[in-house]
Every structure is written in structure tokens, then in C-alpha cells.
Image 1: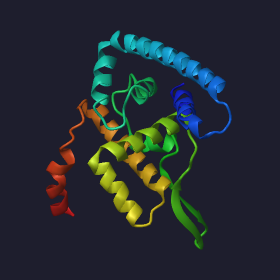
Image 2 (image 1 turned 180 degrees about the vertical axis):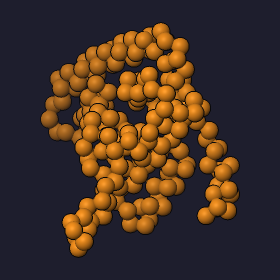
Image 3 (image 1 turned 180 degrees about the horizontal axis):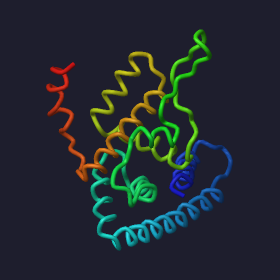
Length: 197
């Protein structure tokens, strides 16, 4: 519904470029946006109500909401997938949803670059893609990483997939440690990693 609403809002902003009389269509789209907003608000309120009924789930949700890319859509989705589990394995999750790069080779002579399978739950893939785009836009660490990889000639979708894997590792670490996101963690530890490299 969020995607449908965004698509309709996009149509409304582009309506002025058309020569045809768009008044009737714009009225219909505006009504649809209003109806979708009403349904989305209702679902978000019900989701919040359900989360608040369980203290452990509520605490998990509040922790996960501090992470880059986790909002009102991905937060409840992540909970619905993993609530009840004490620990999460980032590699297994990346593989399960088709984000893990797998080598392509035939015998010893034919080998292509590693790439993700593209399989897995389409809803999770779509929402994680949006989370990676959000992280790239709003968080300097991910923005710098994206720009560096693009400058090296890496394809946009490949770099976004790499960011998704970074986010999954982050989310799993936060889940397993029951710790909120620390935006200064990378800067505070960069000198340690450089020394050990």
C-alpha cells in the first residue's frame, strides 16, 4: 500500500506535463491516496498495539528502530520473521533471502563474478532494497562506501546489494547483543582496524 500510494503521488506531481484534461484523473488519484493513507494509518496503529502487548517484542522493536534503514515497514517485518529467536546468523539470513553472493563456475575453466541469487521472499528483498537506499542517502558511512565502490566501477545494484549485506550484519549484531545502534562505532574503531590490517 505504501508503494501504491507513492506511485499515485508521483502521478499527481507529473500530471501538469500532460496536455490532456487531467482533472478527473487527478481527483480519482487524490481519493485513492486518501484511502490508502487511511488504511496505512489503521494498519500501523494496529501493528503498534500488537507490539506493545509484549514487553520483550516491544523492547526488541525499540532497539531495532535505532538502526539505519529500519522504519515502520521493515521494523515490524523483521519482528514477524525473527521474533522468538535469541540469536540470528547474518550469513544464513543473507542466503535465505537471496542477498549472499555465490560463485558461478563450471569445472576449472569457466568462472563468472560472484553475484546474489536474486531468489528469496520478494517482500523482504524489496524492503531491504529500500532500507539500503535510505542508509546510502542519510548515513555518511554508507554514502561514502557507495561513492567509493561506484568510483571503482562497481554497478549500482551490486553496491546496493553489498550495503544490504552490511545492514543485515548490523541488524543481527544489534539483535544478538540487544544493543541500540551506535552511530559513532565505526569512527571510534577505525584506528583499531587500521592497526590490525
